[in-house]
Image (tube, rainbow, N blue to C red; front, top):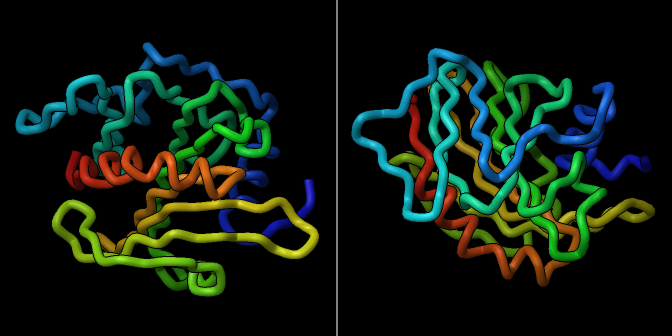
Length: 193
């Protein structure tokens, strides 16, 4: 795999470090980082959606029930993956595929969001992540000699960690088609799970 910088390199390296690239999740399976994770009594998933809870990293997020809750396959537990296709990595998606990453970077040494975001941002607008003001970025990551990534993402600092939700697709048409889903996922995010 060629280096493409930013998000796709991080995803590729994390997935390449594992023994298998086949997910074990399915649309009917919701896995959690910790067996002690329990739903927040005040949180109800949107109709037709499921909730993923991470007690270890302190967040909850909804995702469409027909999306796959993907196995981390050896990637750090700071990253969680979902996709509308059963794939092991973003580069395995069809043109209609969307890959969601929820990432927590404890005590980051770099900026939040990472510096590559400003290089490739096409559009940006204000939004919130669980009442924390942030920016929603629409990114056209098209490095010379590398695979393109079309991204909708948000990054926010909370409790000394950089939390991000990123939706990657291989075409701008797919990125734009899943924008409504991305907005609902982002709106569902809650700290303190």
